[in-house]
Length: 566
Image (cartoon, rainbow, N blue to C red):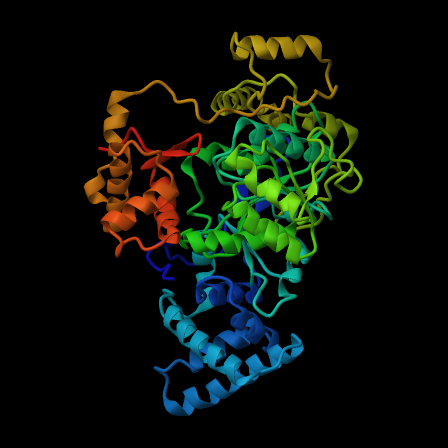
């Protein structure tokens, strides 16, 4: 994993972030990460994913800093009089760490450790500097991302459960965009996962369950992907409408790559809204890390570990959501699955989990009282760099923070409105934070104006709205702009060779009148280019890369090339 070309190097202190577009926002100055956390970030840079060898070695070291120095001194480029003693020290750290972890240092374990050590040595040289303290801005993307370690008050303690098996490892640290307090705002978060090519039934269940959980103050955790994940996040955000922000649970999206590679692009509005409404985007990987297919499976373990209750709303037999459910079962989490039509393949995964007694049946989407702990307010504790806790102000402040039930559809329009009012009344900044409103999630056929008018007429101030079970339809395409489309045209010839090959396979499937799915692509690949694309993992990895570039789109589970492809 080489990240040196993806992150801009700089020096100095971390920066500040001030989200003022909702009542949830507070002044946030991202502080310089502690020294130990910076060294944990440097050690993470040396990894190619979750690494039990590094976790064990760190358990045997005095600190992350001492491990880093031993790692640097044991590099093969060092003189033998320095490298030899350092190798002995780092071997001792590994053995001590295994002992503290309750494992034995067998000969096979030592061989595996030495192989891992070689990889760490290779990757550490990709850092732009070996002076880790000077890389604080480099690791935090110029102060736009938090980095927290296990000693931070916002660290989710349940991640420690990932160490119960010798082939698992918790993350060394976490990168965060948004409010870190969201991670510990609920003692027993609710995880919601499912397929990307979800049906309206699956989307409804994910959205509704997430909304009801957030209304009860619970944290909703998912993966930020299209389909089920997006529906769950939007459901949690929708819970704010007509309710006090201090009473509504947050949502956290867990990503499989660095936070400067979050995707898909179609969900950009969703990610911005999660940050603006007090939620968080998190990753265990350094900025610049590409979200490869195998990393999604590792990402799933974090979703499972953070969740006290995991709900699979809809999944095929080969869905990644079943991988998350497997992690949750191993971690002894409560797992629920939503039953569906047995004639539909999209429900086969959930139905099988229920039939195999690996999940309990979710009997209703409109109430989470039977599957979650008691209703509560989000616990927004003290966090260095955040000036205050939501909910600790006076009742006057709480009234100012209330999100109105009637809101405009466009976030941009409300931003301009708030800016205009600010110029007329500079002293009214506190109220301005609440004037920025969320997109209306209930739309009538007559358009946004009639929807908001009807809502305002039927609901008095402060009264809770019933669940809408709707969300912004991000599939709706704006009117085409020929000039803009020409500028954004994607030239296939400029793509990497493997991605061009997959585009050719998509076109070949269409020539054969096949429905373009990963399985169909694999069948055609085995006939035409068996050596270049050997397995389904390669297909999924390339599809993920093409989706991030905007080359392909999904429509009801069917893949197609974007209209911008030239």
